[in-house]
Structure formats: structure tokens, C-alpha cells
Length: 158
Ligand SMILES: [Zn+2]
Picture (cartoon, rainbow, N blue to C red):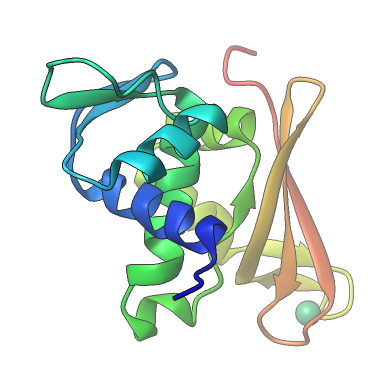
């Protein structure tokens, strides 16, 4: 059978997320490596894994590999009701900054963003986040009218 190696690689990487057992923020992770050797070697060649050859039962996942694994895992295995809420696209720096905002404050922020069309604070359908300078910029659409809206989060230490 001919099969698409890139698809196998993506699914394997997604499953590696499930068997991650040591996560070092910003430094990658380690995962159990009971997968097809050729696939693990390809993922190593792609820069997602450290060299899988060796007697250890686990393999190192690079930071890039871990983030990709998480994204793929959510894409392939999240339940439908969670998939219908589009996963916001955040750059790693934006994700980090957003993670520093307390959950209650995050909720308040996305529940009331100024919409120039509705002329009130509206719930934001969050789509993406990125850093512009030291500020986090959230972009999405107004849940009432669908217009493009944005919210800037100032640096935390000012
Ligand atoms: Zn609106």
C-alpha cells in the first residue's frame, strides 16, 4: 500500500502529545516513543524530535515539535463541540502573554470589546493574537454584527 508519509508523521506527532510526560516550558518535552521507527526518524529530520535512537524509552520533543503536536492533537482529536469554536491562532509570544492574564480577566476582556458598528462593548469571537511591540493585540469579530474588532492588551508591568 502506498501511504502518505506526511500524514503518518502528523498523526504520530499528534499522538506523541498524548504520551508526553515531561514538559519544560519553552524547552520542549519528553514523550514515550513506542511508535514506528521510520516515522520517528522522519520527525527527527523535520526538527520535531531529538534523535530517537538510544535505549531510553522516551524521546525528546523540541519546543517547535511540542507546539505542533499540541496543535495537531487538538485538530484531530478534539470533540466536535470544541472544534466548532475556532481555536484562536496565537503566536507563541502572544500565547505566553495571554497566559499571564488571569482567567477572570481574560473572560472580561473577550466579553466586552468595543465594536464601532454596535457602539457598545460586545463579546468577541476571538480569532488570533499577536504581539505588536510589547502589547498583545487580539483580533476577531463582533458576536453581534460580525464586524472586525480588535483589543490591545498593554504590557503587564506598566
Ligand atoms: Zn458589532
